[in-house]
Amino acid sequence: GAVVSQHPSRVICKSGTSVKIECRSLDFQATTMFWYRQFPKQSLMLMATSNEGSKATYEQGVEKDKFLINHASLTLSTLTVTSAHPEDSSFYICSASRAGGAWETQYFGPGTRLLVL
Amino acid sequence: GIQVEQSPPDLILQEGANSTLRCNFSDSVNNLQWFHQNPWGQLINLFYIPSGTKQNGRLSATTVATERYSLLYISSSQTTDSGVYFCAVGGDYKLSFGAGTTVTVRA
Image 1 (cartoon, rainbow over the protein chains, first blue to last red):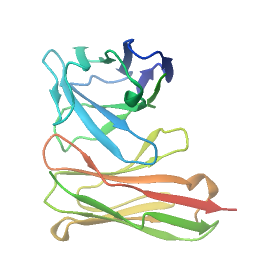
Image 2 (cartoon, rainbow over the protein chains, first blue to last red):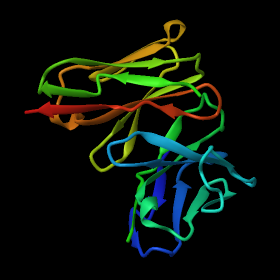
Image 3 (cartoon, rainbow over the protein chains, first blue to last red):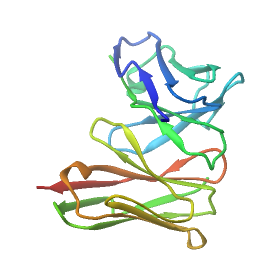
Image 4 (tube, rainbow over the protein chains, first blue to last red):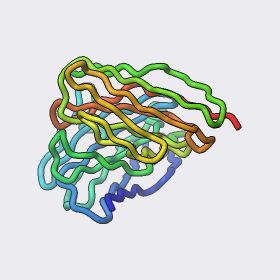
């Protein structure tokens, strides 16, 4: 149990286009989902936290108008990178938590590699 | 936010060797998890261990919350244990990740 999927696994796009990444909890309901980005050989940095049916909470320094997050159901959250630029190229990883509290285990998706040309 | 330090940053092991990875954190936490990130980037949950000791096969972990550290033990290492091991801690709803320990197990 506790499987999280992401789609697509990798995407290449041209500068200026928008890219949508989906994160799904396959066998549980996720009241809270988290979006991270990871640059090569670095750690994971939390971008935002999304709760089903409410606006996402963004970490300091993350542009909410550039990284649009929607958590429309208890099993799906989407991250849209708008007007992508080469510096947005990164590994984007989502996670999902059953209860949303810090003491609940987060289960991670396999990640999406984004390359912006 | 909570600061997380992992050591050592890199570890090279001969197959069959044992090792200990350490995670120090700067404040009290409600959540502490150990992950293994495989070469394809997938994060695999190893332990949810805000306190106490747990074992799962060749892996075990101990967290001493009062002294703000956690240890991950790998025994009889195998080449499939290679990858990056992350410690992540949370005081509230967020997890803060350490920089990771890159483990290379040689046959």
